[in-house]
Length: 436
Ligand code: TYD
Ligand code: MG
Image 1 (tube, rainbow, N blue to C red):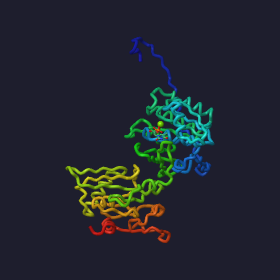
Image 2: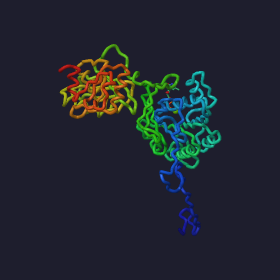
Image 3: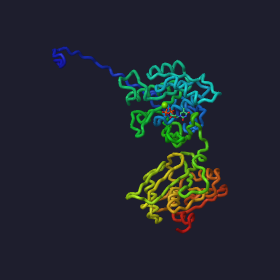
Image 4: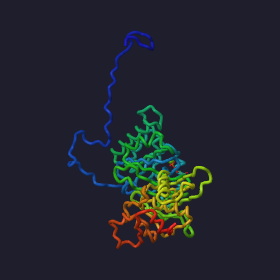
């Protein structure tokens, strides 16, 4: 350009070559040449077993050294509590707990609340810093056995100008933490907030960068919290950890079925028990429905913990295939404990509970159900029947209603529970309620 558009002078431009620095290689990349898969050493399956059994379960058996684990969840669900509690119980390693959200005093107060007297805190280092380079410098000096970052949205990297919490910053800081984790084989936990609609810059962009993504969820007003694996490079993604939030912190719930079935005096209409499976974990869940005549024009359908569309489908099946006039009624469905379940085996239990409420006919508390319902009103088989049977037996149920296609491969000699197998919904209703 001959003339400068800013100062209107001629020939004042000087050429300057911008040298492009090669992009940093991905931290997990090995030698820069292809090698035979055959020649790569399998780094023996080494896991750090944490003091939290539920966490070990969702991680696939423990923490992998050098792994980067993201814990996502809505604000206030208990992410900081979960990780501080983990740090407190992790006595044999040095823990660096970095917080950009709370002051040292706040963390101290929370720690006092969480620990019972026997726990010493000499192994936890608290660092209230938000600059990524500063954090990594401290981490390299301290060389901790576990690094916790609360939260990724508060970090900023000096290498970028944008504000903390922006997508670019979050991504940059994560990349730097990733490099640290891989180079030093330190396991790193990062906390990430998501909003109700999951749109905030943050965890979504990170999911492909980190090794493991855990989702901490639950209803803030209810005590139960679920830790779910949504991505895991070192294990299965169908694992589930359950906690109860108490005034003294999170309690691991090792036997969830017992809490998901409420205590009551005698059977109530509209209440049934479903033998479901979340991940690899059998859960017996109480399904409650209330079907009552609609007083105004359009009937209402409302659900907690169950898919709304699936409910509509099941209502249509009950109407069309079984002749129940659900279209004239308001329908409310509730799964106990505020837990969200996607297992199709819940279908039969829900259908029975709907009809039980509609007809005011209670179902015995000694019965539970496990079958998927198809559009034709037929009962379909569900997977891992043995596990469901074992859980139902453990909790003292006497009868389990299943699809007749579920009976294949079942060793009847080992089973003490009574299995009732049917092909159609109508047959189940006839068996339970007699001919209506
Ligand atoms: P917190 O861990 O701060 O949530 P997050 O880091 O996900 O934003 O926990 C928030 C809630 O947990 C808070 O509302 C109070 C409750 N809580 C308890 O019920 N018991 C406890 O012992 C602690 C520490 C917190
Ligand atoms: Mg927090």
